[in-house]
Image (tube, rainbow, N blue to C red; front, side, top):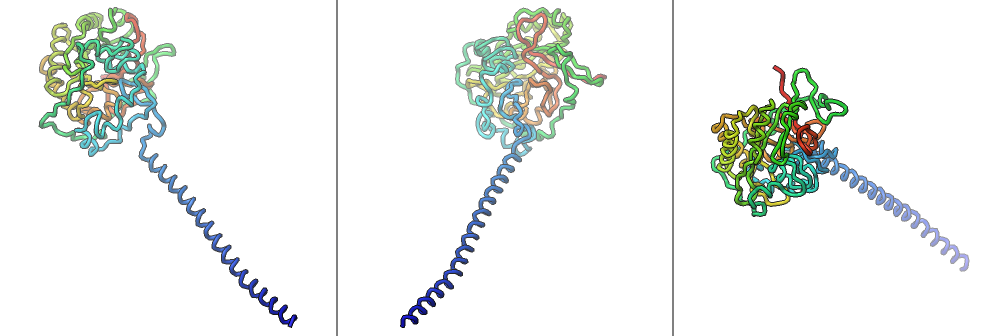
Length: 415
């Protein structure tokens, strides 16, 4: 009996072992498969993440991917990525034309956030030489003030007023062109360089073109020795003739030294152009601005050699009256200004712009139709679009003028 029991126990043990071994193998297999599945899932997630990143990168323009600086206000450099000039299609433009410039589709990149208020580049909105003030305050105001908005000081107390809703013009047509159809920048970036190792002036080295140095001025420059300017080699000037206040009333203001400047520059042999800082919110106001500017030019007795430049700008840091007009309205204003100016004094009319404005403020028809005075404070002009004059610095030193000056280059093909 004892032996039989032992044998029975031995057989039970043998049976258990025979049953456990395959179970063990099955469990190992299950765990192995589970581990393999987890590894594959992790790799799949990793691949998916990489693919997502690649899709995001593919949607970013080359300039954004490279962290290229942007020019938002008169050549202003910020760390914000530069807009991609080819990003908007014809359909995009049609969608955006009626969106307010600071609201809706275009307001995904509001000006107040894009522009660093402490940047010294704020001044081209005002003429280009002020520091630490509202950019529109500066260009509207001429450009040498410091620490305060010059437009505010010359808009007859309207700077604090609330913005006025933009008027909707009837019958305005949508742009028939895409930005890809706009005339292109024909200049070779490699041919831009400084006049000399010690000169702050940039020129264009090409035997097929003539590059002329110039400036732009407003009353903030004060007394100017125009003969000294001419003797230093400057060939042309854009004179601010006036501006509209950015407050609700939008009063028209004459630059107090405009006539003096135009006469002095002409006498010294410089070619003379003019510009008007606009805050028009309708074609009617744009016509009013053109007629106002034309009257000042008539009183000066100077016949313009260069165009009267339309300079519509966005006011930074405050609610400017023209901040919320649509792209289509801006372009309609430009056309109305041009027609009125040509009728009043039979002059050419050009458009003042920087790269951001070209992308978001003006439609393709407007960019293609007019000559452009382009602001870009870089070593080379980075616009993909055509331009005739390039404002390349706001910190120039010009004999005969005190303080920082805007420097400009006029590149024209040799006949």
